[in-house]
Image (cartoon, rainbow, N blue to C red; front, side, top):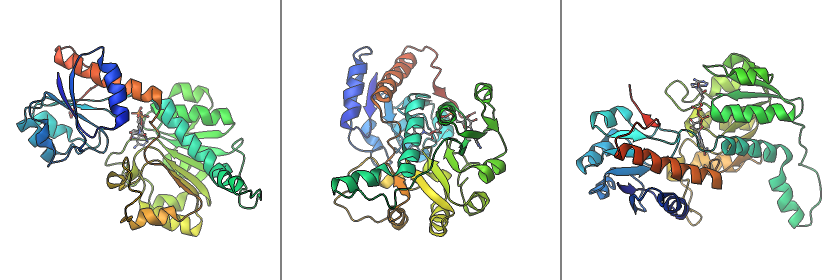
Length: 331
Ligand code: NAD
């Protein structure tokens, strides 16, 4: 199959070339992100391969369909950036990689928690300056804390298991309950109860109309003073303005983000020589108790191997007319 691979990074080539040895697809690696203006370069290909910051809106799908694209292969689990209805109408199949690094993402959430808690990032800099003072590095013990996990799918369940291993009391909220977690002692509660009782809250539910701005002024008001909030899921789960207000008052005591509401224009590129235009992001960077990583939770060797292998297997199955279990439907 001829695949137009949008938004290519060096690491994508490395892992996709290795995996493609077993598939023999004809991949054209393209630098531009997929958007309305770049979609025409997919002409002559059967499939377009997209990442989370590519645009899969109806307008883009229309241009891709005009170029003869039959398949959209998402090299991600999340698919909120793709208009599935528009794809269905254009008779374009959409497939994804449903699970590639649940442990990697959960472990990154815990890394954010532990770094914010014990301030190893600040200690690293201090010690290099021969500053061994402890003032400002006071942490807390995870053991005995109450941690709330919102969304106990693959990643949330992995996070809950790690938190239970720390000796936390683990509360969870999901529309479906996971019996294996309950057997471990995880307590399913209402979202209101989770917000009210948790000292640490970690978000692992998908971004959908019902979860957009799940963390807002009202829900922040329900939380404990000094709560630690971690988001490795999708930026729009948090209303940034409200969380900035809550950081200013101290209601939020620590904030760890791997995703950000307006990350599309920032993340995955080197902007170190640019003037930062996003004032909310700039404000977040001023807080000593905020730690931001640029959507790297998935970024492990294991995950990249898995993403490449599953994406190309999806396309091989579609090419051969075989059922592809990772196809997404809009109905
Ligand atoms: P999953 O589908 O296995 O789990 C999602 C869970 O959320 C499900 O159990 C579902 O029932 C639950 N859910 C649905 N609606 C909910 C609601 N309103 N409130 C609470 N829970 C709800 O997905 P996953 O693989 O665990 O991934 C979770 C999210 O992590 C993805 O949606 C994606 O956005 C994000 N993600 C981020 C990265 C990263 O690098 N930062 C990588 C992969 C995935």
